Image (tube, rainbow, N blue to C red; front, side):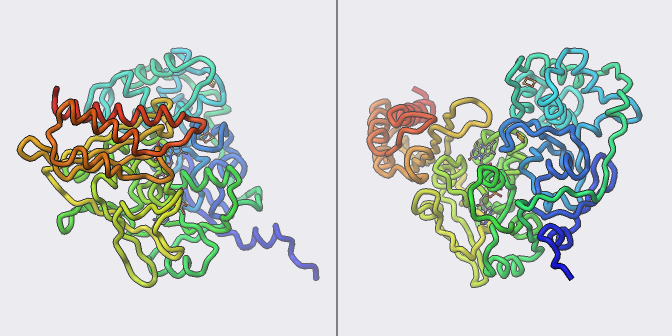
Length: 478
Ligand SMILES: Cc1cc2nc3c(=O)[nH]c(=O)nc-3n(C[C@H](O)[C@H](O)[C@H](O)COP(=O)(O)OP(=O)(O)OC[C@H]3O[C@@H](n4cnc5c(N)ncnc54)[C@H](O)[C@@H]3O)c2cc1C
Ligand code: FES
Ligand code: FES
């Protein structure tokens, strides 16, 4: 008897994932770390979603997952189990084009076959999220809002004018719908014809924390939250992932609540959830402001606060905010839980205080109604920008002076930092022009940025000083 080949062994071992695509139930037997994009294109024969960058930058692979627009190149199939996927093939229904497709045609918004499917899905998610003519937030429909909605979708040929016009036309409706060409009117999803790729990592999806801890202690597994860092690293060939520990089903890592004077945010909370949360808006609105500036809709719908903290990039946008808010990061493992101040959590470049067998469980932000917090991010472009400098400043005004001042920055050192010498220049002082000038000069001298492809060290110093000066000026009103 011949031994089974590696491919056969893997095919036998591959778990079955069941979900719906364009309202049809499908099932695939593939490793859980396989990208949804590959499942759609290779396993199910739905080639409308395109691969541009494979790294979340271009949006060509955009699909709707339970109605939210996501980059299918960054979604592992283990996290699609039991959920609803809509692809561009599923937009036309009953033999008629979706009104947005018809609007794209009538405005000339169909510019190329790579980007258009993703643009359509981002536009459809935007239209579905609000009532016609209104944004989800209730604000009037504006070009800026449409541009934000499609900012995760790149065009390198013609620009966005006609696409924005098409989304507006479909929002304002009614658009004369058109008969769908047969090729797109009959979306076919085949089932179970998986094309094996031996590079796809497997995934375990524990449903209880104890199970997660046991799997983590077993070794060889990498925690996976939204995958917007982990799958990019995999695409870039960073070694070390054999198997994902999918955290999506752990209820303990989800939710936002108020307890013991603190705002408690589950590690698996996405940026979109931070933006939508009434509790965040009431007790720590700066978190929502920060979240609105992370990536674009596709990243905000998937990326999590816990993932940002664990990645520990010096450019991570949430990290200076958490430092300025005196947040505590609660981690847990088989031995129990411990709470670590955010200011002690990042000991070295891309290192955290997390032990190898621990998970980040939640983030606790002390509720201080008398505190003001300002956040500024400077990047190389508006959407999808890695910050050149990110600055968060917190203080309490008392008798005309600033108290409990925190000045925290990202992208200006190997780790996110608190600028303690700068804090000392502001502590107990009235926010005058002289004080602001001294604080800005102290900050420029205190930080240790380096030259890299995005910016020079000198530019970062001067930007950091200027934005701190402006924050003090705006707060004081001189
Ligand atoms: C196009 C694009 C734009 C982006 N823009 C921004 C931006 O503007 N600002 C910004 O700060 N970041 C940005 N990012 C980076 C990324 O989206 C964020 O860092 C995000 O918060 C990562 O969260 P995640 O849930 O996707 O993490 P994952 O990719 O799932 O995980 C990231 C790391 O954290 C670990 N991990 C995750 N959760 C836990 C946990 N609970 N306990 C222990 N370890 C855990 C994983 O093992 C992995 O090492 C961008 C990424 C892309 C692809
Ligand atoms: S292929 Fe570019 S975002 Fe997925
Ligand atoms: S629409 Fe594809 S590059 Fe412009």
